[in-house]
Amino acid sequence: MEQTFAATQENLQNFLALQESVGNALAKMYDLNTQAIKNSISNFTQATKTIVNSRPQEQHNAITQALAPIQQQVIDYNKQLFDLFSQVKQDIQNNVEDIQQDCQRYACAAVENISKNAPLGTEPLVSYLKSAVNATTKVFEGVSKATQQAVSATANNFNNHAEHVINEVQKSSNNVNNNSKK
Image (cartoon, rainbow, N blue to C red; front, side, top):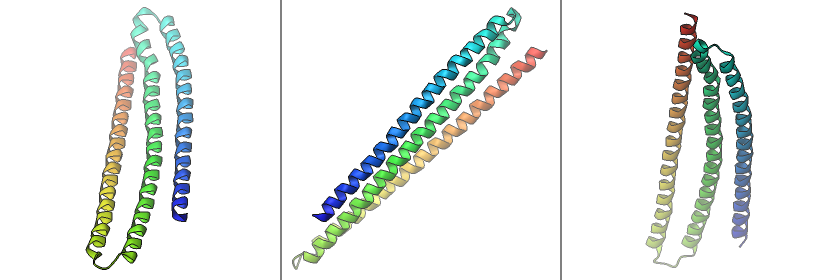
């Protein structure tokens, strides 16, 4: 009875920690979106003024130069959003792993208790039960490891693509600036 109460209490504490993590992430996302909107309005206003005040033959260059900070802002926003979701995912994953370890510990304790109190002749059944618990644990560990590798690969791909886009935006901005000077 005490083990059940302790397990329930621990699960509630895990749930509260997870709830706090998600709440903090939502607050950060709200702040991120608010800042992105303010920056977008400011950049758009500045870009519009620059384009309106430029001569007709310079408008193409003015538009390109005005869009460069906006492009960078979109890239930065997406990276921050990805980092935020990655942190929430990590918190959830840690919580799930903790719960899994607790369940494994309780299952092992229950199997051990059963094996101690099992009547004679049930040793093969107890052995089978222990094997099932071990197999389940190994499956969970394999899935967990594969998930971590997939998330890591996705993060690396995202970062590589973001760097590529940033480099291409900078190259095109430099090309526009060089062409406008000619």
